[in-house]
Image 1 (cartoon, helix red, strand yellow):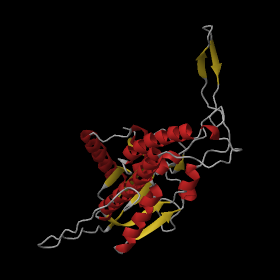
Image 2 (cartoon, one colour):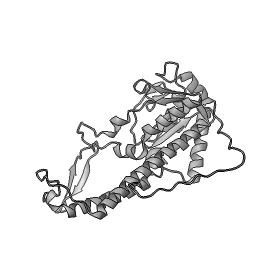
Image 3 (tube, helix red, strand yellow):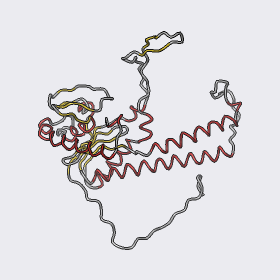
Length: 302
């Protein structure tokens, strides 16, 4: 008997020949990891995938049951809260929980377990897909723990906002920038776990997982045609390289794939030689994704 109820297991024995193992790729694939997506570019393939796409279904259920639990807890413990709804820290009486609350708590625990299992399975399935394409993975090093924290510095927004007053007049104000960053997306997608699984699987098949120096490399800023660095807004998902438009994440993965031997800068000669082939592969991938209805405008740009 477990906290979520009884669990039953069945052992299935299948007769016949064993399934063939997945063929392992031999090329090099540059990986540009994001908080919600992953982009990869190899010699003959481009990959642009959303991490754990169905995790939001568990998030909605968790949010709904958490709200129900909060309401139940407040009804059962009216003396534990102040008039403004905050917890009364001076009240040291034990908390009271209804039978329904205890059931919901078990259900919440089960939902977190299912969400974790789904994310791990989804990441491993995507890693298996990448392993069939490539064996060597240069990856941009990411500090997800820093990205999930709120910004410390308070800043103003660049644009001003018009606010209509009660008397009908319009007042122009300048709002503060939000301090929230990527904590919710990181919690939902677990990008660090994906990279951990990719490293484990790559090394298990005799491949290599190597991290690129992010501060020196600056994949999102580099232009191999002009050999310059230009910082662009995070909301801009496309950039113009030469006379071609490229998807930001895929181009970064292309640069990472063509990293030099020191793993600190892109090899410009290799980039110039392979760019046209990459651009054609990218256009084919984006066209195929659009035809299939796969879109994520805030990350993919379409």
